[in-house]
Length: 340
Image 1 (tube, one colour):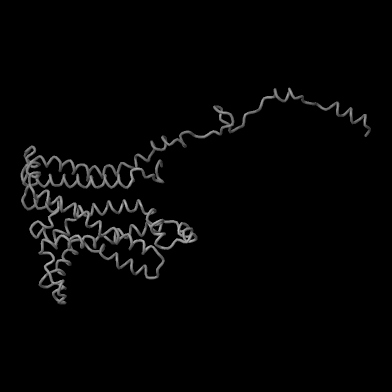
Image 2 (cartoon, rainbow, N blue to C red):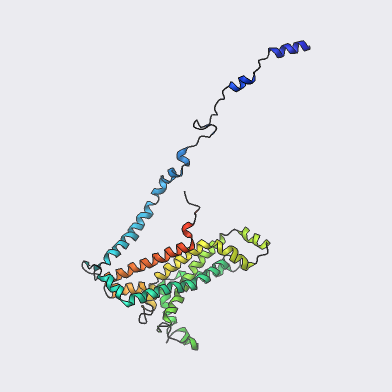
């Protein structure tokens, strides 16, 4: 083909100038949002957090709220109302105003029981916390005998508190106990009959009962710590002690908060074990608030006075829980489930 033919063919082709290209309208994308150029369409109802929170998730709380109201709020309100009444357990309660509160707050034994309860919480925590923490972290390792040890230290949880109380009461009996049978000398004492020793024996037995449970909590928490943290620390030359204080303890912070809260609750509700072993005695050496509440209500038939002690016990438990929550910073804790 000649050069003249090529030029003629090029002249016959349709051409677009720059102005025509700028004036040409762009077709909108099929999935573009008309409210904003180039923004993909999304379902607002599916992605909005408010919409998801107004969905079935709120209805899922209904059984828990109903259960808590029936077995928590209603008995609590009934106890508060009964604290202003005079009732011996029979007949109808009669309103007595602040008489029950006045008699309880003026009674010196109430403050003695309150002091013993606080001392029980502190004593059981001092014993349980280090032992359960070290035992739980140790059992979270890869030792061959870990399974056998787990069964052995878990045994106290398999028995009821009443059975444990009867067993220790017989073991510590000054006449027929183990120490007397084995002629152990210094251990041949009336452990539960001495006002000085009985309270500390109770602390030891209560701690022995609950250490396996808290060890299980720490064991589960330690197993959730990423192994890569320990590997990185070992590469930097950190030993086991340094890894424990720099990695394990910080990672178990919220497990400690949960465990400590349960320790306090366990000490505040340690009634059955104390009642079986000492019945609050000798004298009032082990008469903590739960035992005092029971003796006032079911031995002295003063249900109004017992209700006052119960309200004080609830207030003490809430105070401990709020104080622990504030000191630990768990009120600022963020959950992975938040917003779901």
